[in-house]
Length: 394
Image (cartoon, rainbow, N blue to C red; front, side, top):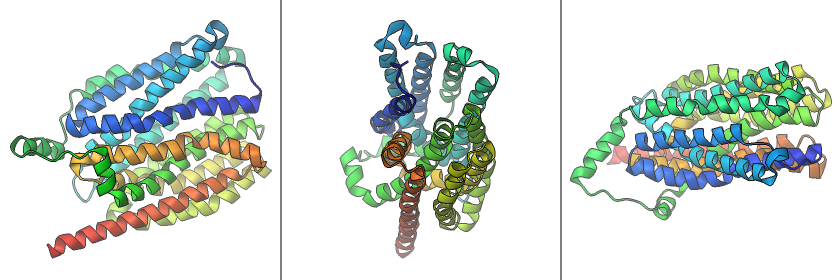
């Protein structure tokens, strides 16, 4: 889809086009978050899935650069930006609805299914890529095979729209709508949200930083890095991603349940610190002795630790904001964090590795995100304690 270039340069171009979608995510997140907070979660989620489906279909049917030249690059970038715009509102709106249906005392468990859905998507993506790499010749894969996951993925759009357009609004949001009928509620602008909730925004941004870094560096960049820089077979990278995603899929509900019982801080912070400490020796082992087993070990250990802060993260973000601005607040932090620490992370890590010559650079990037995540969890748990104390005095 792009002009032919050298291997390393082509990887940078690919990561740049991947990262472009994350630049528009904050815009889509805020606009769709405002829509979800005013028109309803159902309307926003129905529109979001159709936009994502159209963007995915465009990628699957666009002719190659050899056929239509630079137009192929333009269409692909446009499709990625449409995906990014719609994805910007997905997490916030879906999480808001999910948590607003959850009974108190079980919100970490119910919220963990948001993380499960992301893990399932990584697992399905990794499985699809592995099957294609393993069963098709390079010529067939380059010619038409790579399009199959996008074409099948686009089929989810109509099915998802049918389901989402028929679901009821969450009880909390329905109560807010009823209240608005009798009392003219204050509608906060984006600037007012930033001014009134700086601690919530910064605290949750730290949580998003470590969660998105762990996914886009650990599950996406490292497997591709192992194939392009360490000489492993590309299918080994997809197998490693699949293994890590399956661990997350199984473990996230368990960690959500533990967070409901023992508190988020006790579950999330030790795992974050262990993840930051172990990233260097795990990556060093892979770099010094590249093998499929070392890659899978990296993914399995990383995913086991990631699950302890992935599982409770959705509830932590949702409970930070009141219902009337919940989607907008989460959209701001999630998409700014996803842009800076997620979508651009593969590009930044590829650039850092190339410029410094240090193939362990991703481990330091992970360690920095862990510091932000730990501070974020501590800030939010302290904030909850202060609010609880204030309510008792009131």
